[in-house]
Structures are given as C-alpha cells and as structure tokens.
Length: 115
Figure 1 (cartoon, helix red, strand yellow):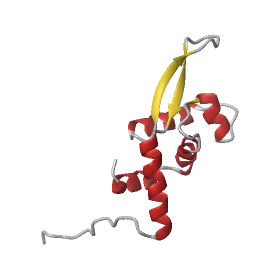
Figure 2 (figure 1 turned 180 degrees about the vertical axis):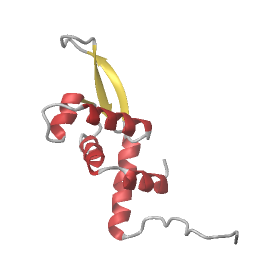
Figure 3 (figure 1 turned 45 degrees about the horizontal axis):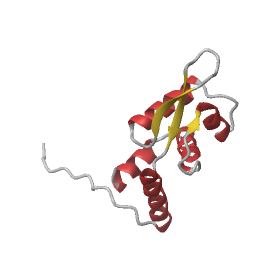
Figure 4 (figure 1 turned 30 degrees about the vertical axis):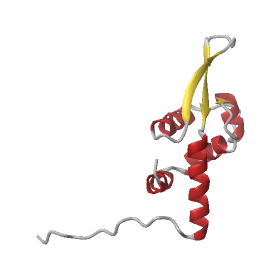
C-alpha cells in the first residue's frame, strides 16, 4: 500500500470505521478477539455493523483477520484481528505527514477533450 492509496482510503472511512482502525493500531501488534475490539471502542459486544466494518477493513488491507480455536459454547473458533507492523508504520508516517501538511498532492482534474 502506498501513501496516496492510504490517504484516499482513510479519508473514505466513516468516523466509526476510523475508531476501529485506531483500536487495532493501539493494540501494538497483538491479535484482538471480537470482545477485545468491542471493549476498545467502548462497547460490550460488537454489532453486525461492527463486524461488517471489520470485514471491510480486512478487504481493503488495513487489518488481518484470522481464527483460533475456542472452548466457548456454540462455536469451535473465535475470530481475531490484527494490524501488521507495515500498515501501522505507514499510518504513523501518514499521520506525521498530515500534521506537517506534507501529504502527497492528488492530481488536479483537467478537461483535455473539449466537447
């Protein structure tokens, strides 16, 4: 993932999705269960919307999703989530650049074909 791609992606996320990204960034590389993600964003449990957000963040490459065995009743496995160091470092660099006002510029829109 490149800086401009990350900038576009982060700007497209909702405040709630950014809250989830922040929770995983703050986990310092640890894998979090759904209950730990819920607590990190101030909830008792995740809603279906929260789980959809986690799926979207995984699809877009910001986080990783995996499973691990569990003894919890009704399930043989639990979902766990993680942000890789590469993504965390890129987000930290993006944040530094944003604070300095030095983010890469997007291409200016031009009209090359007159109709």
